[in-house]
Image (tube, rainbow, N blue to C red; front, side, top):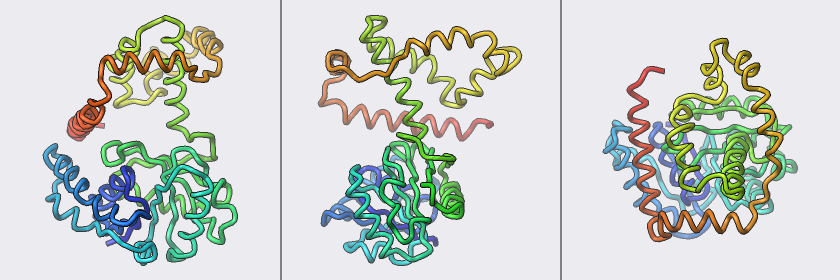
Length: 309
């Protein structure tokens, strides 16, 4: 079995451990805080049981979990790894220090990948002797349910490191996409930021309530977007495809986007949105609703698996 090192046993680290173990890899799991990796196994077994119940894994959860082994020391975690997946704190100085350790201790042919949500690899790998094997492999939370992984190299990342990571992600059931250059926030976050900012603007400007904005996405855009991207969506929304769509609706869309100035998440609007959300879902219910979300994602994945592409 291919050996994978997962560095950091929090929410994302636990999810990555499940992804790689579910894909047949041997996983070493380490966390800087003593006991965290060992404690993570209980949650991992529970989530694997959920996946089994939803029909998303064929193996017994105990067999998958047996491929994950918590490690007390970082060097033991990294020994023999072909791929290292890091999810430390989202601070560039911490990433820089941690990647220096990973570069020094990992096998020389291992790829070093960060799960960072927005820090480019160029910000914390430039001075490393092995910088050519470093990149970002940005997942979507939770990665064991949402398979997309954005691969973003620094200017010095080798094509081989990107190709090997892309192949590995595909082997373990993820859906990798490759950015041709670094951008602030990466691609998925940039697209999400555009939609979230507009949602806040619509509430700020008194156009629509928080609940109804959510409904527009849940019962409108989201239905198509669960199986098509924006380009395919518009390609099918005009008889002549994309060019016809742009000719018909380009002036309208251009006028709309011209009104969309940068949004700074003003305190008053954030407070209004938060108040409406807490009225709909008290803070004590967030954890339970998150578990509901995951069950719905499992059901959606199970449905999609039975549908033609």
